Image 1 (tube, rainbow, N blue to C red):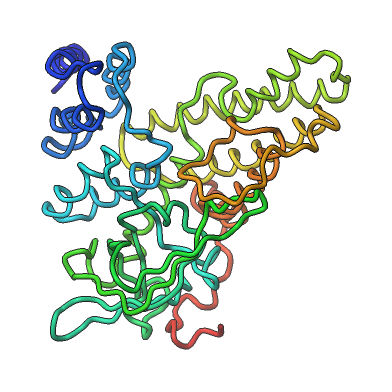
Image 2 (image 1 turned 30 degrees about the vertical axis):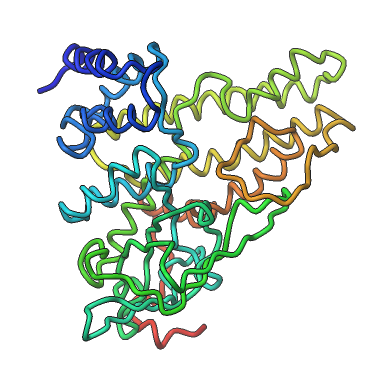
Length: 395
């Protein structure tokens, strides 16, 4: 079993062989992956050493102290937080070796082709079809996906499509890896309330996906997708942040720096939200420690719920605290950013952008059902369509 001392030794050897100040960023990240120091709990040869997940912090601390570059995790969060654990869990050895290294180094960006105009909260109702070509064995995909972050920069996408409409909606789905540069993939920007187009809609017209890019068995796509969704909610709601990190930081700073803005009512609300943010931060830390023992569970839905509520309440308080200044907005320019930067913009942006937090990554209403049924053990809602073939469902 690899321990912390051995990881420190391996990390220092990496730094000695590839000094960050004298090594190309991409070359350093590739060397780190090959040394098994990318995600230490992954298997050897796939960026890890089979070490306990908790020891990743040892490696990260050594590299940060040496000024080593990171892989810009905010830009490639979908790949790191959703695609990678799914490929690791369900991919073939060939798929793992093809996709994981350039995913981790950021050479290849990933996006998620799940939600559809008629299948968002009820994702299993999706209608994008994948039909097997009997001659080539490829899958021919037609359909539309929506709310796709990073589709305009992505090389690869994780995709779920219906392969058997004669089965109930949860059973006739298969999971694929889609090349976003292939013919028939069209990405269109969706302009948001913030003025920019961080999301996209994606149209798939006779897109051919080789069977070698299927993850899991045919018809097991919903099972595979659950791994993706549970990791997604942990990555959104359980990010590691310092005290007063995230949305609470700017409003706490404004309170300290601008005594002229203070009122008793705002003070009471700020105190409550500060405590809530700290509780959420510590709960996220506990959740990450639980992950050491296995895969993420439904508890991640609770973290994502809290993340959305807090962001919306904190950003609303910040706008009120700033008064007339809070009504200003820095830039309505239409652009297609590579990442979301909550703290790098003004209060107006944070207020508007946080409205999407209760929709993306699973709506709050759906997550409440998951927490109620799978965490608290409450009776499930009646599902009259559970055993009905997808093709017979009313739409």
